[in-house]
Image (tube, rainbow, N blue to C red; front, side):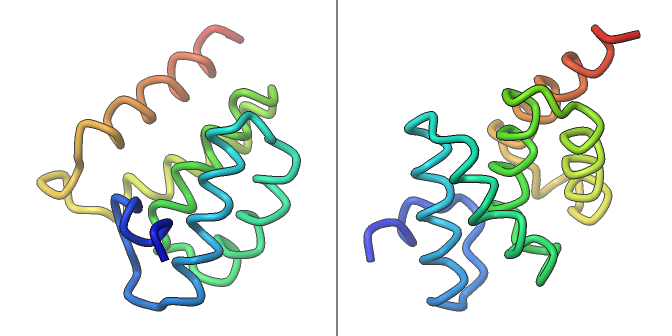
Length: 104
């Protein structure tokens, strides 16, 4: 499916990547509760699904759940080697961290 080709960090598992792609599409359309509903179980099942985790963190942040957003993006960035970070992960991480610091 086309949603798998659009993933920045595909897992190689067609089922997980299709569900992740669906969740990312929901996030991109602004359907945050539905995106969270799809992405949360995926990330709980496998926290190395980076595309799902990044979209979930962003969904949390935009929804105002900054503690969950920070925790989710922090897990991703701790697991990934920094040389594997793309502009997208750096930008999303900065957005989530900035949002969290604004609360302090």
